[in-house]
Length: 133
Image 1: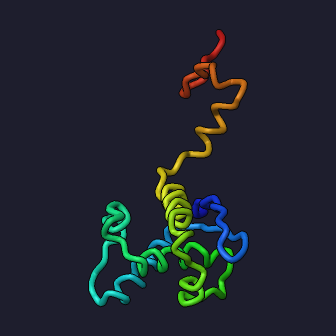
Image 2: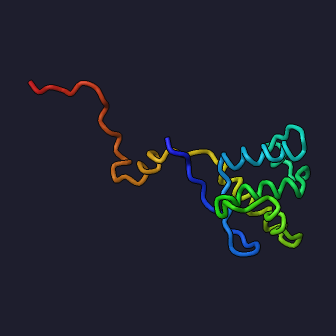
Image 3: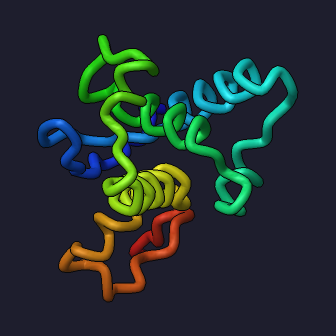
């Protein structure tokens, strides 16, 4: 099974950039936060209660989300991109990227079936084919 591609979220920092959080980026962000704070950090509870999130946590998450767009970007460079007047836009973009990354997966076949001209037909039950006598 192919991993689900998470859509990009545009953000303007030093230039137009794109955020993408996928599961790997979320895992890496949590690992980096654990190393930063030298203790276990649960990113799920941290992101759920924004009042507990620090600027360093935001920088780590932003860094992981920006790596898709710029794989050479360092955490220090990401911190340099952050300005206090941009924090609301950064947080909004990160929330959007988080919501896109953590939304429930949908079955593409079900979506395709919705557009089918035969979607209203109940179909023929499977089983033995009737024989004409």
